[in-house]
Amino acid sequence: MRYTVLVSREKRLVRLFGSDYSVYVRIARLCLAEKNVSYTLVPVDVFASEGVPRDYLQRHPFARIPAFEHGSFRLYETGAIARYVDEAFEGPDLQPHDPAARARCNQLISIADGYAYRHMVWGVYVERVSKPEDGAETDEAKLAASIAQSQIVLTALCDVMEEGPWMLGDQLTLADIYWAPMVDCFRQAPEGAKLMAAFPKLQSWWQRMAARPSVIGTRPT
Picture 1: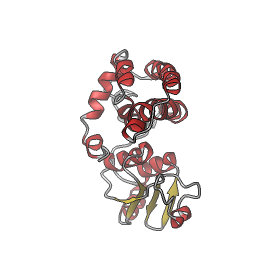
Picture 2 (picture 1 turned 90 degrees about the horizontal axis):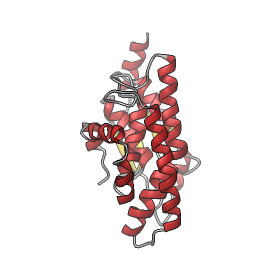
Picture 3 (picture 1 turned 135 degrees about the vertical axis):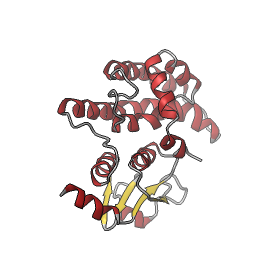
Picture 4 (picture 1 turned 60 degrees about the vertical axis):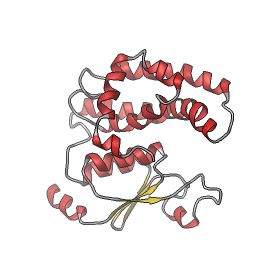
């Protein structure tokens, strides 16, 4: 029965709304790529000077990205999109079936959402890389505070990671997909790269992730 649902759903057009610079848009794109789902990326820039297009608010009332459409079915919130893509389409499972392993996967996703994104992306990458590229000054105090918090985050991450090629062992999961864009941003800051070097387990994982076609194909242009 599940297979019948999968086949019928795959015939519908898939569209993802957002910009390739977004960590969360990239997470959704990685899910689609790992499931080998064809889709159209519809550009939406939430930082555009003219603001978010008014019609986009019908897709996402909080004016964030991404939003998702599969035929007539619409969805927003990256976690919901990622799990829907995994469960609605054929391809390798991105969530463990074992309850304990699935709980661990969700824990790693929660750590990424709750702590890594704030400090590793906004506190380190944006302050040291993105703002200077746009001609703005780095808030050194904010950067220093986020580096300290990032060390706590990475320590917790490595304490939870299993031994194996991926975060939960032999199976690539949504946990790997969530962390890849955040680590990719973080390591671009010199302070981030230096801190990453103190975690060989994470460095080895990143080298494997960075070589995946899905990661290569979703790098921001």
